[in-house]
Amino acid sequence: MLHIVMYHYVRDLARTPYPRIKSMLLDDFERQVRALASEFEMATLESALDYVGGRYRPRRELCLLTFDDGLKEHYREVTPILHGLGIEGIFHIITGCLEEQVVAPVHQNHFLMALLAFEEYRAGFLRRLGELDPAARAQADTVKPETARQTYIWDTPEVASFKYFFNFLLNPSLGDVVVGEMFKYYIGSERDFARELYVSWEESRAMQAAGMRIGGHTHRHRPLASLPAEDGQSDLEISTALLHQHLEPQALWPFCYPYGKRESFPKEAPGWLEQLGYACAFTTEKGPNRPGEAAFLLRRVDCKQAPIAAGVEGAA
Ligand SMILES: [Zn+2]
Image 1 (cartoon, helix red, strand yellow):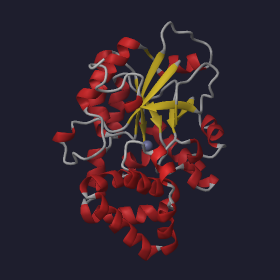
Image 2 (tube, protein in one colour):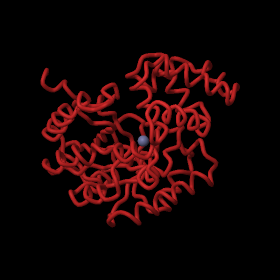
Image 3 (tube, rainbow, N blue to C red):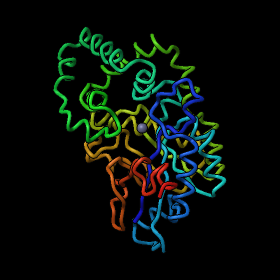
Image 4 (cartoon, rainbow, N blue to C red):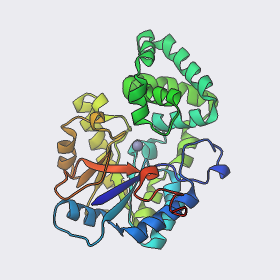
C-alpha cells in the first residue's frame, strides 16, 4: 500500500504571532517523520507512481509526504529536516500567492480566526455579508452539522459549520470580499503578510536543489468545481506556465486540488491536468492507494491520522 500523508502548517506555534493557528508542532513533525521512515519505505514521486502503475513492487509499504500551500516554514524548517533524512517531500504551491503577493482567502480566514474570538469573527463576517447579499447570508443557517463535522473533524461543531459554509456553500468571490475587508482591518497589508507566509520563487528553487519536488495547486486556490469550466482551465494554464517559467525542470510534475474532496473539482479536471503535462493529482479523499489506482485521484491521509500519528508513537 501507498500512504500519502498531507501536511499544512508545521510550526513552533509558541514562537509565532498567531499561536492559535491549527498546526502541527515542528518537534512532533520531526518525530513523526523519523517514525514513518523506520516503519515504511519513504517514496519519491517517481517510486510512488511506479507502484500505483504496477511497475514497482516494494518490499515494505510506501509512504509519501506532501505539503500544501507553499508555506514559508516548508522552506525554512521542513526542507532541511527532510533533506537531512534523505526524504523527498512534495510541495504544492499557489502560484498567485508567490507572483502577486496576495494571501489566499482560505489563509486569511485561518489567521482571522486565530486572532479573533470565534464568535466575534463569525458575527462580524455574517453582518457584513448580510449587508452585501442577504440571500447568501441566509445560507449560513442551512449547513447540516453532521456534514460539517465529517469534513472538519478536529473543530468544534460551531467552527466546523462556519468553515463548511465558507469553503463549500458561499460564493467564493463574495466570501473573498468580506474576508479581504476584515483582513485589511484587523491584520493589515496583504502584501507584507504574503511575503512572510509563503515561499518565494527563489526559495522554491532552493527546495528543488535540496531534492524536493514542487507541484501545482492552482493560481487562485479556488475549488475548481466552483468556477465555470473555462475559468478553471485558464487558472490551471496560468499556474502551470508560471511553474515552468520560474522553476527548474522536473521529470514529473504533481498537482494537488484545492480543498480536494471529490466534489470540489469537476470530473473533467483530471483530463485538463493530464493535457497540461501533470503526472498525477492528489485529493483529500482519505485512505491508502493500491496498484491500479487512478493517478489523478490519489487519496491522502491528514498528518494527524497518518499510519503513525504524531505524539502517539512514544506512548506505544
Ligand atoms: Zn491548499
